[in-house]
Length: 244
Image (cartoon, rainbow, N blue to C red; front, side, top):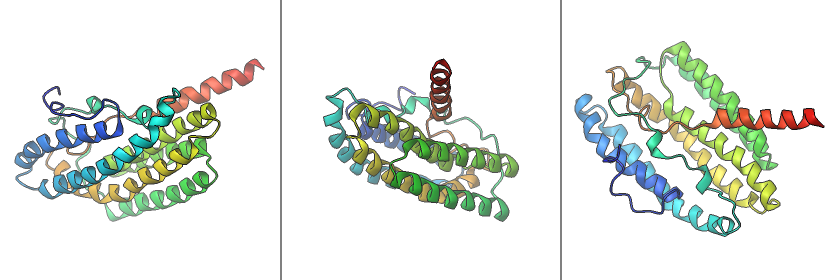
């Protein structure tokens, strides 16, 4: 993994650094996947790298906006980034090797539609914990469909996890800053959620490689400790209430 992460020059832990890491790794893995799929993954790798490069442009803006709060000890944006060192080795085989059936795909689209509606309803009221809980619900439903269809929706799961993780932190940042971080958190979450619309086409393309036993996307997104943090937050709150 050290060789895959070499050559990244942005500030460590910044969003721009995260995007640079991802671009660097996926550029190197592209050749491996290309060879393993006999060219089938070429279109997907190009799409992924294009989207990452676009996202990096916006990353510089969010990093700049967040600096004011960093000086106050609030790690907004910076604290929402998960290291690419949490990704799987490129050789890891996919757990599931099927493509989604029309029935599974329809159900996935329905989950996303309902999630986006709930997401917007909560975010309009700056209810970040509501966004986090909605993300957990949608994530569980996606995983259930993956299991049922024996197919992966790794990018969709990753984006929902990431939104939930960011929203959970946003609630804490808002309390610490007396809601001064709310504008940044809300804008960033809306930007972040745009990735959900791109996720399903990426996953459907990736499933073609999964049929061949090649774990593209599954191996290339870092695991996010969203559900663990949410459970820990709820447990801590429950303990505090019980002590009153």
